[in-house]
Length: 155
Image 1 (cartoon, rainbow, N blue to C red):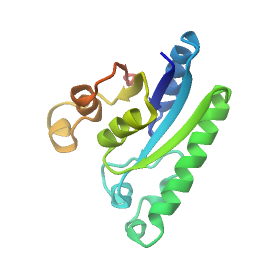
Image 2 (image 1 turned 180 degrees about the horizontal axis):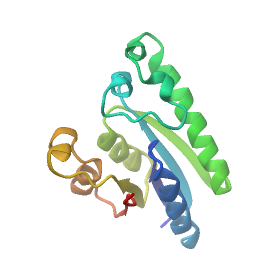
Image 3 (image 1 turned 45 degrees about the horizontal axis):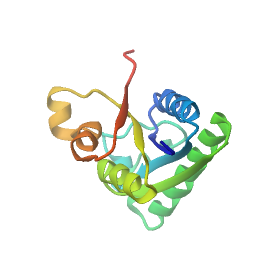
């Protein structure tokens, strides 16, 4: 295996996912591709979004204004740069995709020729899963490459 794609979001568990994915890549002497998928700007003003990692300024309805998408991409790149620096920065590239989270992960894996996808799961159940879906489940059912899924720690 030569390439490990690590998908991170703004959940506090993303640090653990990035660390575990980086350890896996180091053990295989593989390069790392950090991925963040930026959703439609209206997502960040919805109840589905929890404002963390400096994104609290997007938690209002003004986010749908012109240029919000560019602002989200700039913030996402900054987040990926900081994550890369935290991991040590060796053999790490980053990608930002837009749109559906699951589709973005699958598209990035195909485009980069990734050998494995590392991602977390929020372990949603019941009505939460019905209303919001499961990104991990979607990727699991549609991926043609192995996945390393890390569960979110229970609080």
